[in-house]
Image (cartoon, rainbow, N blue to C red):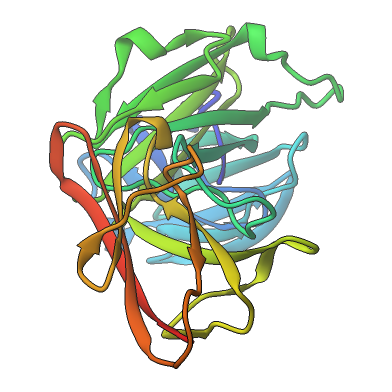
Length: 316
């Protein structure tokens, strides 16, 4: 999202013989992104707007005028450009005053990812589980009309979670933050503002972080092809050889090393031979055919609410 900054409020003197009035010019949204619609509203304090004539100018050109036209909608300029909006107020042919608003867009984005795990070559970033920590980075573009861009070191970053300022993470050059949710499995709003030292450029952005339930994906590990990550094992798997290996990957879960994991075969805990708690090897012994349910589950140590399980039918 890109934004504007208020450069100032200018009150011009009224023409001779007219009573001077204060003219307030506001913009909604106050910080729009470049190209977005901006609604400017003029208010003459102590006067009935229905009996007033308005003349609107954008960059020196009259774009709208008439009675009862206290608002004007325009498109915000591109980043690095600015637009000057002037509204002049008249009543009975006499000037009541004018006000100026300068619209100068700026931009900041929030890029974030969870500290959780994911399989190799998995499409998508790690997503946060309930109580899961994320790392976020602010990417600002505060460009002046001269074309120069304000460096991150000269940019004041103010981070907020659900509107509450995160003082320890905020400051000049503080482009990153680590956030853990306040409430279990509840979405929260992460936002940041980026402002130049002189206060002439400012941008804000917010993003809603949704916590997800942990899950599991299981892949076959082939002696020749390695990890068969093009196809997850779901529902059932047919035992075609004398031995098969499966690798389980927790999704939306932090730090696999901190997880308590368990494999089961036919409802009985499986004793692993690999030394890797996420890798299980199954060997076919004897003749005949049949099927067993293979299960895998994990939970965070000391946090039983963050857990997941999956199972499939192994047929031989």
